[in-house]
Image 1 (tube, rainbow, N blue to C red):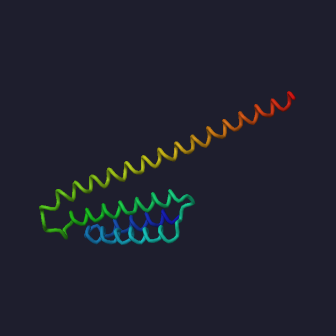
Image 2: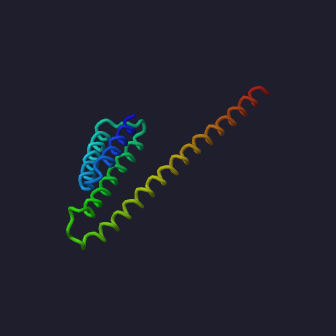
Image 3: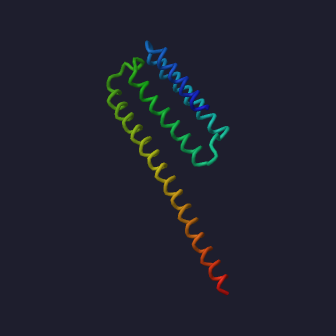
Length: 134
C-alpha cells in the first residue's frame, strides 16, 4: 500500500509540475531520501535481504536523480553533460543487473528449498518402508 502511495505521489509530481523539470527532480529526490530513511528505520520487509535491496534501489534512484539534475536547466556547464549522461547509463545498467541477480538468487533459493523437501520426503518414505519390513 505504501509503495502504491509513493508511486501516486511521483505520478502527481510528474504530471502537474511538467513546466519545471528541475523542481520535479528535486522533489522526487527528496522523496527518495525520505524513503531511504524509512527503510532504514522501519525495515518494512520480512527478509533482511529485501530491505537491503530496497535500500540499494533507492540509493541508485537517488544517484540517477543527481545525474538528471546535472542534465537539467540548473547546470550551465556543457562539459559535464556527456559525463553525466554516461553516469546515468551506468547507474541504470547497475540497477538492472543488481535486480536481475537478486531475482536469480531468489529463484535458486526456492529451488534449493524444494529440492531439500523432496529429498527429505524420499528419505522419510524409505525409512518408513524399512521400518515396516522389520
